Image (tube, rainbow, N blue to C red; front, side):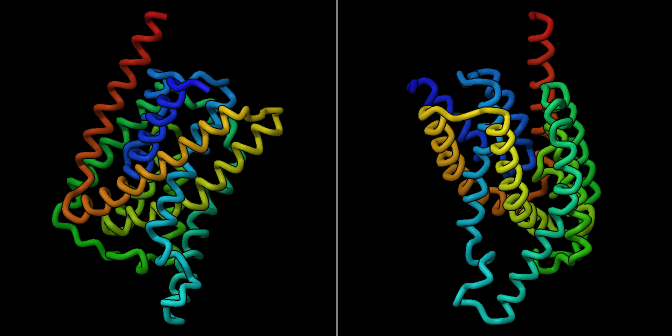
Length: 279
Protein backbone atom coordinates (compact mmCIF):
# COMPACT_ATOMS: atom_id res chain seq x y z
CA UNK A 1 0.00 0.00 0.00
CA UNK A 2 1.51 3.29 -1.13
CA UNK A 3 1.05 6.68 0.56
CA UNK A 4 1.07 8.31 -2.88
CA UNK A 5 -1.73 6.00 -4.06
CA UNK A 6 -3.72 6.83 -0.92
CA UNK A 7 -3.40 10.54 -1.75
CA UNK A 8 -4.62 9.81 -5.29
CA UNK A 9 -7.64 7.94 -3.91
CA UNK A 10 -8.45 10.88 -1.62
CA UNK A 11 -8.30 13.27 -4.57
CA UNK A 12 -10.59 11.02 -6.63
CA UNK A 13 -12.99 10.75 -3.68
CA UNK A 14 -13.11 14.53 -3.37
CA UNK A 15 -13.76 14.92 -7.10
CA UNK A 16 -16.51 12.27 -7.02
CA UNK A 17 -18.16 13.85 -3.98
CA UNK A 18 -18.19 17.35 -5.48
CA UNK A 19 -19.25 16.45 -8.99
CA UNK A 20 -21.72 13.56 -8.58
CA UNK A 21 -24.61 15.77 -7.57
CA UNK A 22 -23.78 18.88 -9.56
CA UNK A 23 -24.94 18.77 -13.22
CA UNK A 24 -21.36 18.86 -14.51
CA UNK A 25 -20.57 15.15 -15.12
CA UNK A 26 -18.64 13.30 -12.45
CA UNK A 27 -17.45 10.92 -15.20
CA UNK A 28 -15.83 13.75 -17.15
CA UNK A 29 -14.00 14.98 -14.08
CA UNK A 30 -12.96 11.50 -12.94
CA UNK A 31 -11.56 10.61 -16.38
CA UNK A 32 -9.58 13.84 -16.59
CA UNK A 33 -8.25 13.62 -13.02
CA UNK A 34 -7.35 9.94 -13.40
CA UNK A 35 -5.47 10.73 -16.61
CA UNK A 36 -3.43 13.32 -14.71
CA UNK A 37 -2.70 11.46 -11.45
CA UNK A 38 -3.25 7.91 -12.82
CA UNK A 39 -4.14 5.49 -10.04
CA UNK A 40 -1.60 2.63 -10.22
CA UNK A 41 -3.99 -0.32 -10.47
CA UNK A 42 -5.19 -2.71 -13.16
CA UNK A 43 -7.60 -1.41 -15.80
CA UNK A 44 -10.30 -3.83 -14.63
CA UNK A 45 -10.03 -2.62 -11.03
CA UNK A 46 -9.99 1.04 -12.15
CA UNK A 47 -13.33 0.55 -13.93
CA UNK A 48 -14.83 -0.96 -10.77
CA UNK A 49 -13.35 1.77 -8.56
CA UNK A 50 -14.75 4.58 -10.73
CA UNK A 51 -18.27 3.17 -10.39
CA UNK A 52 -18.37 1.71 -6.88
CA UNK A 53 -16.89 4.85 -5.29
CA UNK A 54 -20.30 6.38 -6.05
CA UNK A 55 -21.78 4.37 -3.19
CA UNK A 56 -20.22 6.85 -0.78
CA UNK A 57 -22.04 9.67 -2.55
CA UNK A 58 -25.33 7.74 -2.43
CA UNK A 59 -25.00 7.17 1.31
CA UNK A 60 -24.81 10.95 1.74
CA UNK A 61 -28.27 11.31 0.15
CA UNK A 62 -29.66 8.56 2.35
CA UNK A 63 -28.31 10.20 5.50
CA UNK A 64 -29.37 13.76 4.62
CA UNK A 65 -32.87 12.73 3.50
CA UNK A 66 -33.34 9.78 5.84
CA UNK A 67 -36.47 11.13 7.46
CA UNK A 68 -38.03 12.20 4.17
CA UNK A 69 -37.33 8.80 2.57
CA UNK A 70 -38.22 6.65 5.58
CA UNK A 71 -41.84 5.44 5.34
CA UNK A 72 -41.62 3.76 8.75
CA UNK A 73 -40.67 6.84 10.78
CA UNK A 74 -42.62 6.93 14.06
CA UNK A 75 -42.70 10.72 13.77
CA UNK A 76 -44.85 10.58 10.62
CA UNK A 77 -48.62 10.39 10.43
CA UNK A 78 -50.28 7.64 8.39
CA UNK A 79 -50.90 10.14 5.60
CA UNK A 80 -47.23 11.12 5.58
CA UNK A 81 -46.16 7.46 5.55
CA UNK A 82 -48.43 6.80 2.57
CA UNK A 83 -46.94 9.86 0.87
CA UNK A 84 -43.43 8.51 1.42
CA UNK A 85 -44.41 5.13 -0.04
CA UNK A 86 -45.87 6.92 -3.09
CA UNK A 87 -42.57 8.79 -3.44
CA UNK A 88 -40.65 5.50 -3.51
CA UNK A 89 -43.05 4.11 -6.12
CA UNK A 90 -42.37 7.20 -8.27
CA UNK A 91 -38.62 6.70 -7.82
CA UNK A 92 -38.92 3.05 -8.89
CA UNK A 93 -41.08 3.97 -11.90
CA UNK A 94 -38.53 6.59 -12.95
CA UNK A 95 -35.74 4.00 -12.74
CA UNK A 96 -37.46 1.42 -14.97
CA UNK A 97 -36.32 2.98 -18.30
CA UNK A 98 -32.67 2.98 -17.17
CA UNK A 99 -32.93 -0.65 -16.02
CA UNK A 100 -34.68 -1.87 -19.17
CA UNK A 101 -32.43 -0.01 -21.61
CA UNK A 102 -29.30 0.24 -19.49
CA UNK A 103 -28.65 -3.43 -18.79
CA UNK A 104 -28.52 -4.57 -22.45
CA UNK A 105 -26.42 -1.57 -23.48
CA UNK A 106 -24.00 -1.55 -20.52
CA UNK A 107 -21.13 -3.20 -22.42
CA UNK A 108 -21.65 -1.00 -25.48
CA UNK A 109 -21.65 2.18 -23.40
CA UNK A 110 -18.36 1.13 -21.77
CA UNK A 111 -16.80 1.35 -25.23
CA UNK A 112 -17.89 5.00 -25.48
CA UNK A 113 -15.87 5.85 -22.39
CA UNK A 114 -13.31 8.13 -24.00
CA UNK A 115 -12.32 11.77 -23.79
CA UNK A 116 -13.87 12.84 -27.09
CA UNK A 117 -17.35 11.53 -26.28
CA UNK A 118 -17.17 13.02 -22.78
CA UNK A 119 -16.06 16.41 -24.15
CA UNK A 120 -18.85 16.46 -26.74
CA UNK A 121 -21.53 15.69 -24.12
CA UNK A 122 -20.12 18.24 -21.69
CA UNK A 123 -20.36 20.97 -24.30
CA UNK A 124 -23.74 19.89 -25.72
CA UNK A 125 -25.51 19.79 -22.35
CA UNK A 126 -23.78 22.97 -21.27
CA UNK A 127 -25.37 24.73 -24.24
CA UNK A 128 -28.75 23.10 -23.48
CA UNK A 129 -28.68 24.35 -19.88
CA UNK A 130 -27.98 27.90 -21.01
CA UNK A 131 -30.70 27.80 -23.68
CA UNK A 132 -33.23 26.31 -21.24
CA UNK A 133 -32.49 28.84 -18.51
CA UNK A 134 -32.76 31.73 -20.98
CA UNK A 135 -36.20 30.37 -21.84
CA UNK A 136 -37.07 29.99 -18.16
CA UNK A 137 -36.71 33.68 -17.34
CA UNK A 138 -39.93 34.71 -15.52
CA UNK A 139 -41.36 31.21 -16.13
CA UNK A 140 -43.76 29.75 -13.57
CA UNK A 141 -43.01 26.14 -12.67
CA UNK A 142 -46.23 24.21 -11.97
CA UNK A 143 -44.35 21.58 -9.93
CA UNK A 144 -42.74 23.35 -7.00
CA UNK A 145 -42.09 20.35 -4.71
CA UNK A 146 -41.09 16.71 -5.17
CA UNK A 147 -44.39 15.60 -3.62
CA UNK A 148 -46.23 17.25 -6.54
CA UNK A 149 -44.49 15.06 -9.12
CA UNK A 150 -47.03 12.65 -10.61
CA UNK A 151 -46.39 9.04 -11.60
CA UNK A 152 -46.50 10.05 -15.28
CA UNK A 153 -44.03 12.89 -14.72
CA UNK A 154 -41.72 10.53 -12.83
CA UNK A 155 -41.76 8.12 -15.78
CA UNK A 156 -40.89 10.94 -18.20
CA UNK A 157 -38.01 12.08 -16.00
CA UNK A 158 -36.81 8.47 -15.97
CA UNK A 159 -36.67 8.53 -19.77
CA UNK A 160 -34.35 11.54 -19.59
CA UNK A 161 -32.19 9.67 -17.10
CA UNK A 162 -31.46 7.07 -19.81
CA UNK A 163 -29.51 9.77 -21.68
CA UNK A 164 -27.00 9.76 -18.82
CA UNK A 165 -25.74 6.39 -20.05
CA UNK A 166 -23.64 8.33 -22.55
CA UNK A 167 -20.38 9.28 -20.76
CA UNK A 168 -20.06 12.97 -20.02
CA UNK A 169 -23.81 13.62 -19.99
CA UNK A 170 -24.14 13.64 -16.18
CA UNK A 171 -26.91 11.66 -14.54
CA UNK A 172 -27.97 14.62 -12.42
CA UNK A 173 -27.63 16.92 -15.45
CA UNK A 174 -29.91 14.80 -17.65
CA UNK A 175 -32.58 14.32 -14.98
CA UNK A 176 -32.54 17.95 -13.84
CA UNK A 177 -32.74 19.21 -17.42
CA UNK A 178 -35.58 16.80 -18.22
CA UNK A 179 -37.49 17.60 -15.03
CA UNK A 180 -37.28 21.34 -15.68
CA UNK A 181 -38.45 20.88 -19.27
CA UNK A 182 -41.50 19.02 -17.96
CA UNK A 183 -42.27 21.78 -15.45
CA UNK A 184 -40.41 21.03 -12.20
CA UNK A 185 -38.85 23.88 -10.27
CA UNK A 186 -35.08 23.88 -9.87
CA UNK A 187 -35.15 22.63 -6.24
CA UNK A 188 -37.72 19.91 -7.04
CA UNK A 189 -35.73 18.79 -10.10
CA UNK A 190 -32.47 18.65 -8.15
CA UNK A 191 -33.99 16.83 -5.16
CA UNK A 192 -35.74 14.21 -7.30
CA UNK A 193 -32.46 13.70 -9.15
CA UNK A 194 -30.80 12.90 -5.81
CA UNK A 195 -33.45 10.30 -5.02
CA UNK A 196 -33.24 8.65 -8.44
CA UNK A 197 -29.53 8.15 -7.87
CA UNK A 198 -30.13 5.73 -4.99
CA UNK A 199 -31.44 2.68 -6.91
CA UNK A 200 -29.62 3.54 -10.15
CA UNK A 201 -26.17 3.87 -8.61
CA UNK A 202 -26.63 0.92 -6.26
CA UNK A 203 -27.66 -1.13 -9.28
CA UNK A 204 -24.75 0.09 -11.41
CA UNK A 205 -22.26 -0.67 -8.63
CA UNK A 206 -23.70 -4.15 -8.06
CA UNK A 207 -23.61 -4.91 -11.79
CA UNK A 208 -20.02 -3.69 -12.13
CA UNK A 209 -18.81 -5.77 -9.15
CA UNK A 210 -20.62 -8.90 -10.36
CA UNK A 211 -19.11 -8.57 -13.84
CA UNK A 212 -15.68 -7.99 -12.29
CA UNK A 213 -15.79 -11.22 -10.25
CA UNK A 214 -17.42 -13.26 -13.03
CA UNK A 215 -14.51 -12.30 -15.28
CA UNK A 216 -12.08 -13.63 -12.68
CA UNK A 217 -11.24 -10.39 -10.91
CA UNK A 218 -10.47 -9.95 -7.25
CA UNK A 219 -9.34 -7.34 -4.72
CA UNK A 220 -6.05 -7.27 -2.91
CA UNK A 221 -6.10 -5.90 0.64
CA UNK A 222 -4.68 -2.58 -0.60
CA UNK A 223 -7.29 -2.31 -3.36
CA UNK A 224 -10.08 -2.99 -0.85
CA UNK A 225 -8.75 -0.21 1.39
CA UNK A 226 -8.54 2.16 -1.60
CA UNK A 227 -12.17 1.48 -2.46
CA UNK A 228 -13.42 1.97 1.10
CA UNK A 229 -11.34 5.14 1.54
CA UNK A 230 -12.63 6.57 -1.73
CA UNK A 231 -16.23 5.91 -0.66
CA UNK A 232 -15.70 7.53 2.76
CA UNK A 233 -14.18 10.65 1.23
CA UNK A 234 -16.92 10.80 -1.44
CA UNK A 235 -19.54 10.53 1.33
CA UNK A 236 -18.13 13.44 3.35
CA UNK A 237 -17.71 15.73 0.36
CA UNK A 238 -21.14 14.78 -1.05
CA UNK A 239 -22.84 15.99 2.12
CA UNK A 240 -21.41 19.44 1.50
CA UNK A 241 -22.04 19.28 -2.27
CA UNK A 242 -25.73 18.41 -1.85
CA UNK A 243 -26.31 21.17 0.70
CA UNK A 244 -24.50 23.64 -1.55
CA UNK A 245 -26.56 22.79 -4.64
CA UNK A 246 -29.91 22.97 -2.84
CA UNK A 247 -28.99 26.35 -1.36
CA UNK A 248 -27.69 27.60 -4.71
CA UNK A 249 -30.71 26.66 -6.87
CA UNK A 250 -33.14 28.37 -4.53
CA UNK A 251 -31.57 31.69 -5.50
CA UNK A 252 -29.86 31.11 -8.86
CA UNK A 253 -30.38 29.31 -12.16
CA UNK A 254 -28.20 26.63 -13.77
CA UNK A 255 -26.48 28.82 -16.37
CA UNK A 256 -23.23 28.92 -14.40
CA UNK A 257 -23.03 25.13 -14.64
CA UNK A 258 -23.74 25.35 -18.36
CA UNK A 259 -20.79 27.69 -18.92
CA UNK A 260 -18.63 25.53 -16.68
CA UNK A 261 -19.48 22.42 -18.71
CA UNK A 262 -18.53 24.14 -21.95
CA UNK A 263 -15.17 25.27 -20.58
CA UNK A 264 -14.46 21.83 -19.10
CA UNK A 265 -15.47 20.18 -22.38
CA UNK A 266 -12.98 22.33 -24.28
CA UNK A 267 -10.27 21.48 -21.72
CA UNK A 268 -10.98 17.74 -22.02
CA UNK A 269 -11.05 17.92 -25.82
CA UNK A 270 -7.80 19.88 -25.90
CA UNK A 271 -6.09 17.51 -23.49
CA UNK A 272 -6.96 14.36 -25.39
CA UNK A 273 -6.32 16.03 -28.74
CA UNK A 274 -2.85 17.12 -27.70
CA UNK A 275 -2.16 13.70 -26.15
CA UNK A 276 -3.13 12.03 -29.43
CA UNK A 277 -0.82 14.31 -31.43
CA UNK A 278 2.08 13.82 -29.04
CA UNK A 279 1.48 10.08 -28.87
